[in-house]
Length: 290
Image 1 (cartoon, rainbow, N blue to C red):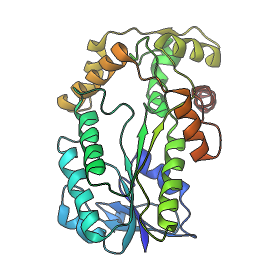
Image 2 (image 1 turned 90 degrees about the vertical axis):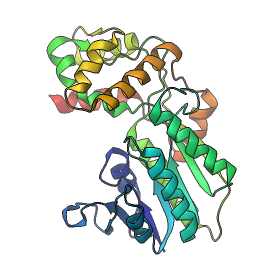
Image 3 (image 1 turned 180 degrees about the horizontal axis):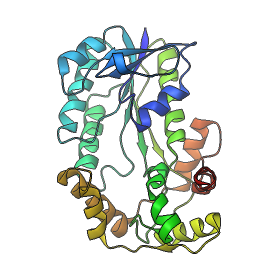
C-alpha cells in the first residue's frame, strides 16, 4: 500500500514530500501533469485533479494513507468533501488533513469556513483523520524583499494583536510524522488534531523591529491600511482571492491569532524538536538576499 500526497507541487505538499522517506514506504504524489513532475527520488507521480472526482477515485487505488490538502479555489469545499468521501469508499485507513488555525473563529472567511466545515464532517463521521491547523506561514514574508531592502518597510498589515506564525518546514515534518504513524498502524487510528503554531506571538511593530535588527537598517511597520494591500494582490490574483485575504488580515487586526503555550508544546512533542522561530527564518533569508 502507499501514501498519496495531494498538493504535491505546492508550498506545503512539497515540504511533506521532502520529509517523507520513499525508502521506507511507497510514496505517490498527485499532479495534473505527471510527465512534467520533478519530485524527489523514489516518489511516484500519479495523475489526478481535485476538480475531477473520477480522477481522484482512480488515484486512490492502492492508497492506504492520504495527505489531503484543498487548494484555495472557489469550490475548495466541494473538492475536499468529495475527496474525503472517495477515500472512505476506497478503504483508506488514515488521512492527514490540512486545515487552518482558528478555522471556526473567522466565520466570514471562505477559505477558513470551508475547512471548519470539513472538520465538522470528520467529527460527525468519526473518521480516522489527523487534522493539522497551521497558522500564517512564516515563509509568506519572503515576498517582502523589495519593501524591506529598498524602502525599509515591513508591509504585511498583520496588526497589533499578534500572530503565532509557523515555519512551513515544521508543517511538512508534522504531516509526514502523522502520515507515517497512520500508515504503520494495522488498523485505523482515532481522530487527532494539532494546532501548528510558532513560539512567538508577533505584531507588525515587532516584525519591523526584528527585521531592523537582522538587516542592520531602519525598518518601520507599514501600518494597517488594507486598501493598498488589496490593490497589490489584485495586480496578480483574482478579485475574490484578494478580498478573501483582505478579510483574513482584517480578522488578524481585530482578533489576532495567538497560540496557547500548551499548543506550542504539544506540536513540539509531535515534531521531536523546538518549533522554528521567525528570527531563524529572517536571519537565513537575509543571508540569502545578500
